[in-house]
Image (cartoon, rainbow, N blue to C red; front, top):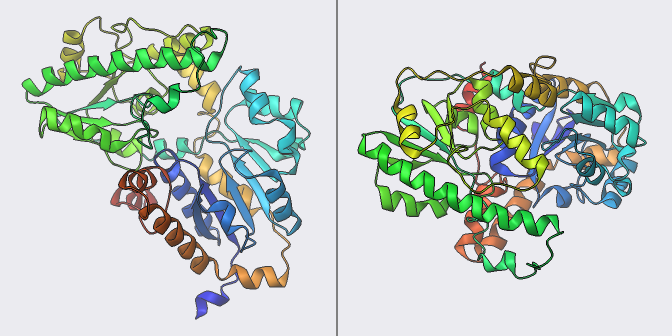
Length: 426
């Protein structure tokens, strides 16, 4: 019964996309626990609902728009502190920032905004009404994971960072669904143009990947494929059936765990190169092989910049040769180092997860006695909500359940792995 009289403050951490954010969110939760907080992870299916029953001390959101403004303002009036620990950010992109921090979101009501770069920090201060002291350039808390990454050698395994979410949707919806409302003659619509370009690019790189896998398994190499967080993992069963036991699909909770199990990574150029590059894992890119490219200048220039951190062979035979080279070392680029440092604030913030935790515990919420009393029912409420959501999806088809397991955090389905528990000791 002592649990129900626990007077430690309560923090909720919203996990917007399970496979993208769970590990770093869990690590933040561990840091808060060390500082005397009780912590509960929530998801798109539970965050809004739990706030109807409980009044936590602090809520950490992934985006300014995660909750409806009215719901957030009501909770703030009860004493809840809201923080945005941003999980997706840009640099030198005015349009994206204007959408992310648009006026109707009332950004000034947040107790703190944690951004990744000096550029983003300055933009928010200059273009929103939030107090400047509430904007914190700590970098991405994923930086803390990378600093704790322990690499292994001689895995005899080639890692593939796949990026085929336009062909393999996370919720397994039919491809027709995405095309129904597109106007193919509206060439000025950025979304329409990008959609068709991405389809072609993803299809080509998927074919390149399949050709490469055939060469690697003939050479007795193991291949481990890491699907994009927005892909349906079950869609990759086709590849396992086609290529046999030498091919496995990575189901680890975080790309850092994946990187620790491979000798080299390959695949189409994408932001997924970032963790591999920072961690010192060699990267072999499809970039020079692919004929289909994006037409948007900002997109293709950023991909060209990222490709400088990788080897750039001109055909699949060369990709296979580099992937199997025993003495292959990670490529370094001063230009990429400067870009990533400006984007993620790597040198200034080696352990942002500790900085975020320190920020949250440095402030105190003034909650009513009734709110404090009901707060002690957090475990029961969270289990009930997760059970309710699970039952709702079980009544639907198996694809919905699979999507939930891979996309939405649920405490009844997800537990910290041995890899995560090892992070706790680092």
